[in-house]
Amino acid sequence: MDADRLISARSRSIDASGIRKAFDLARTIKNPINLSIGQPDFPVPERLKRAAINAIESDQNGYTVTQGIEPLRERIARHLAWDLGWKGAGDQGGPGLMISSGTSGSLLLAMLALLDPGDEIVIPDPYFVMYPHVAKMCGGKAVLCDTYPDFRMTAERVEPLINERTKAVLFNSPSNPCGTVPSRRDCEELLDLCRRKGVLLISDEIYDEFAYPEAMTDTATAEPKAPRIPSPARLAGASEDLLLIRGFGKTFGCTGWRMGYAAGPKGLIEQMLKLQQYTFVCAPSIAQWGCIDALDIDMSDHIAEYKRRRDLVIEKLGEHTEIAVPGGAFYAFPKVPDRLGLTATEFIERAIKERVIIIPGSIFSARDTHFRVSYATRPEMLEEGIDILARLLAG
Image (cartoon, rainbow, N blue to C red; front, side, top):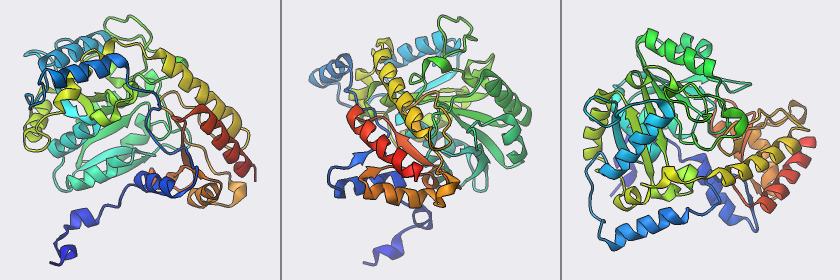
């Protein structure tokens, strides 16, 4: 059989993830200093482990309803009411709510529900690697919004890109690969623009809990109880015009459990649920039971440790290059200094010779001028790797 002849043009048009290639490369290097992995290096909280184990032992191993188990949906609904002022998510009169197989599952289902061939979705540049490829898989086109040099996706930058083919604007905060957190004004203006233009705003907030104190300044909820990260979902009436996508993997270290959720316009969630029936069927049952208590767990000690690592990266690399201070997530996106005369890909090749694995900006962007550093790794490995990068950047 000629397998190559059978492969679709859709599949041929998509390259393997550059991040996966970095993982493969790390396995070939002796004692690599791997600063490429976007995965927390702390263990899953014991409370979540016990809940998942109990689910297995009590035979909660079968399919669940497509929208997710009721106890988890009820807990998320209470959290959205507290955090955003969204009342009754998942109920008859409230926003729609569904559990998905990771936030990636929500993104795929949303684009399948929204995009017809030729339709467009505006995404930030730099972007999370899956954004343009999922749009292409769904028959649409991702239109890049240039956010350099501060990596803020503002209404002013987005508006010229919206046309009659635009279905949605995809917003990511804190962002991957930059760690950028918007101001409240950024959020207000972007949501207002999408409302005026009649397009959906999708807010990908997988790192919503993984933000640092200086970014947690927004108390503009319906019932504010604590400083929170600025989000367009926090604005009045947002649940009618915005699809919120969040998850558990990054905050609680359970990335392999594939647990996300989406909330927003009920009609859109209903379409996403219909598509989930014929694709994922449901999110993993054991993981759903395991995550019920997640939103009651205090992860502030881990977040404080990651802030310390963030500060180390900024202090050491900032002496030699431009680097926007991340307000959340666990990435930094430094620029390769012009004086080196190198693309980011060429700089990465030098770093690899020193055993340091990082990701070139071309994986996340139309530009090849920056590189992504993940500081979700052991502190001693991080410090060694950052010292090597600082030396290379100094020339």
